[in-house]
Length: 105
Image (cartoon, rainbow, N blue to C red; front, top):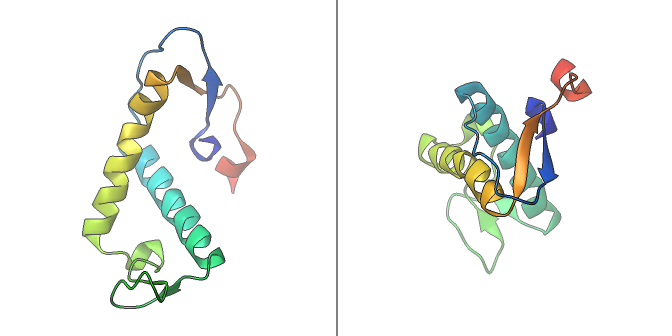
């Protein structure tokens, strides 16, 4: 969340659900894909045109720019659901009062 100048805090009562801007969704979705790709690669997965779980081959192990729009849309929808999921678990997403160094990069 720091990528878009937000942080997450545990609260006692369910907080208001926020809505990310389109730019925030784009930033988080790209970052989430990078995180997922790194996790897969560290587990021994490689790129291949067809999914093969036994051989650890996945067609989505590409850069964000090379990811097909169908898969990007799935990630966008996933990211859009985060505020509600967090609120349901009593976590509040709050804008940071200072610019995160990652926003300056």
